[in-house]
Amino acid sequence: MKSKLQSLTTILFILFVFCNCTQQNSKNSDKESPTQQDVTLLPENNTPAFPLPKVPIMITDPQEGAIYLSKHFWDKFPFTDTTFISLPDITEQAFVDYIQILNNIPPKHAESSLENMLNKAQVEPAMYDHFISLSEKYFYDPNSPFRNDEFYIPVVAHLLQSGVLSEAKEEVYRFQQTMILKNRVGTKATDFVYTLANGYKKSLHTLQSDYLILFFTNPDCPMCATTTQQLNSSEVLKSISSLNTPNKKLLTVLTVYPDSNIDEWRKALPSLPQKNWVNAYDAGTIVTNKRLYDIKAIPTLYLLNKEKQIILKDTSFEEIEEYFMNIRR
Image (cartoon, rainbow, N blue to C red; front, side):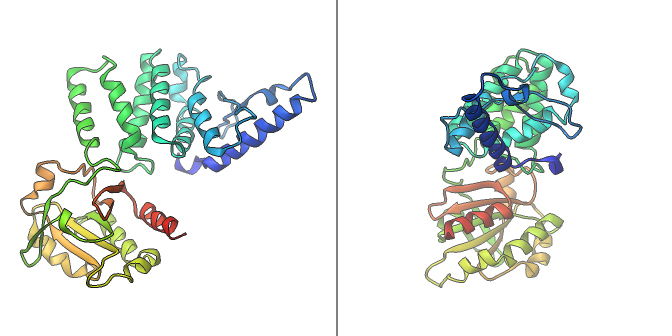
C-alpha cells in the first residue's frame, strides 16, 4: 500500500487545476463531458472508483480547499456496497489519500471529518467495522507511518458510543482510549524519575533544555540502534546541539531504558552517545507499571519544549529532524 501512496500536493494540484479549469470552461459551454463533471480516484487497474468532490472555484486557498475536501471526501462513496471492503485498491487507497488531507487541516476540522465519515459508514455494520479497522491500522498501529493519536481519539470515542461492541471489545477500546488521552500534543509531559549510571536520580521536569528528545530505548532492539545512529549523526541536530554551553542547553537527548534488566543496560551504555545525551533507566519500571506513557513499541520518541510541553508524540527521527529544519528557516 505504501508504494501506491499519492501525495497531498499531487491530489490538491489535480483537484484545483482540473476543477477550476472545468468550471472556467463551463462558462463558455452549456455542456460538460462526463469526465469534466467529476474527479475520480482510479486504482492501478484503472477501474473507476467513486467521484471525489469538486472544489468550488471561489476557494483558492489550499488549506480551505483541503478543508472542503475533508468535509465532502466520502459523499459519494457507496457505504452500503460491502464488495468495496474486498477492494483495497479502491477503499483502502482512498482512506490513505484521505489521511493526507487530514494531515493538512486544523485538528477541529479533522475531528469533524472523521466523525462524519463514521456516521456515513454506520449505515452498513460490516462497512463500519471495516472503517474502524482501517482507522486502527493506520492511526494506532505502532508500525504505521501515519500513526496519529489525535486522529484515533474521535474514532475510538465514536466506536464506544456506537453500542455495537461486545463487553470484551469495549474493555479493549476503553483501555486504548485511556492510553491515547495521555501526554497529548500541547500538554505537559507526565513527570517521572530517571536513574543515571552512578545511581543519581533526577526528574524529567528538572532537566533544563530548550528542547528535549525523550527516547525510550532498549539495547536488544535493532531499530533503537538505528534511531540512535540517526539522532547522533544528523547534521541538523548537530548544528543545534553545537550551541549548547555548560549553562545553556538548546537540545538534549534523554534516553530511558524502561525494562528491568539493568545489567544488560549497563553493558550497552558505552555504545550510547555521551555528548549532549543523558542516558538513564527507569528504576522499578515505574513508567511501564503505572502506564505513565503509551509505549506501544520500542523505540518511542517524544519531542518536548523548554516547559516540557509535548511538541511531537510517538514520533519518528524524520519528523523531529523536519521540525528543526522548519524552525531554522
